[in-house]
Length: 175
Image (cartoon, rainbow, N blue to C red; front, side):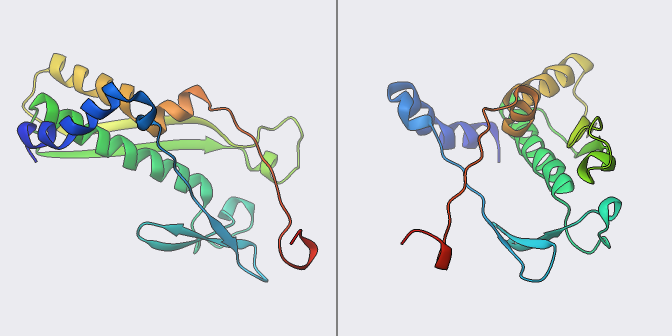
């Protein structure tokens, strides 16, 4: 895709969102179903079902996806698409590009071994490896702009309002 094609694709959306800002609020949804008899769940994805389970650091055998890895995968997917869109909009040719996310978490927190150990990823490094003839200033603007508009990066950086609820279903639930 080139600059003109991207602009043409996004122009009607931008116009609608400028004139009707409420239409820009976009819902996202994900769902998983527990796998009976296993410490695992199946996540519905656009590419088909993915079975998620315990990370090897918490007892898994490594054959099932780990939700922490999936978090980083969502980050690199978003950052990669955003980088490609920004490069296209800026007219920056990328002969090759890789997006790498690395994170660290303390298994003691997840395993309830130490109440002072954090539960969750405690640091994430996102790296862009770029093969381009663009000058350093342009590459800097490219990366800064990709960071600014990457939904997953900004979500993790700013921590959204979170809440957890439940409802009963089946025989024990309200009918």
